[in-house]
Image (cartoon, rainbow, N blue to C red; front, side, top):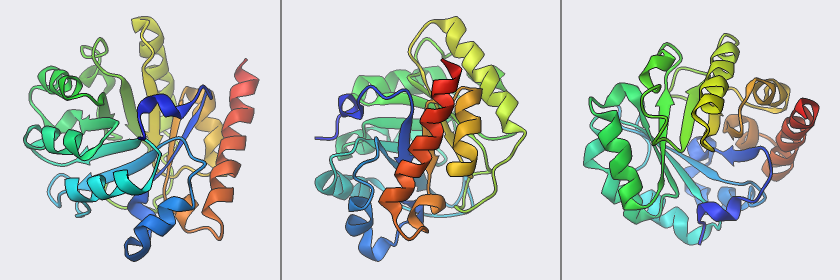
Length: 232
């Protein structure tokens, strides 16, 4: 249940982030966004970023209550120590930060060997040179459009050129690499990041702080698809 193949063929995927959920009602909140394509799970350790969130046990519990593929974003030091645990918990995608490991190529190989798709995340100040030599392995590139650690931050406008450059690298490599953006995404920013090249949009506070999370997912989707149609 919740394999990556269940995402469908839409040119843009919407991935609500549980970081903005009410954790006392996590299953209930997740159920409100069942029309989304993925569920984004931010894992923070209080060291790599200044916040602490969830571990493999929560991922395993989520796997039992949603059909959505689990897009697990490891914002942690020493991610090598936890790949198998998050894979066994039911992650469809495991994304690690290029800044968090000395052996990125080896780590992506290890993720893929465990079964999930392998993603690489870049903080706003991290140059694209960090990913140029792993595009033969990466299934997803995550461009952070805020500084990671907390939800509800404003979108960093200067990340739009960076997304365009990632799109150029992906087109050059000739592989179907997903381009994900995370930070400050809502109906007002969705179209701009899609025009820049994004294909997966992570939205947390915009979705779960709204009166109707499910309807907000569809508003973001509509803005994203309108932009994608304009590209065609």
